[in-house]
Image (cartoon, rainbow, N blue to C red):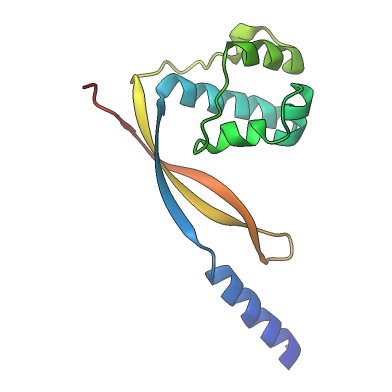
Length: 139
């Protein structure tokens, strides 16, 4: 490895170590959480991007992205179920998650980290990972 490659390698390593993590807590209906996860899985099975699904539903570009990050207020509603069933060419009942919600409200612990670009550099775009799901006690 020549000097130039070593410098690039160190620079890349430093950039990767620079990734900032952020922990966020979000309260959401357990059913909403399961629905969002189920629709995301169907979207991925159909090989659709978040942007493509938003466009096919004739909604704003970032709608599906906002729903799937959980940290935004956007969620699917009854109207969206009809739009999703049209896009996925399925019955609305097929969009309802098989898993029965155990709780009314859950608290999600989310970790937001910078994505990595194809060249290995750190992106400004964030990725949200659910690291914990816990019941919120009814008051």
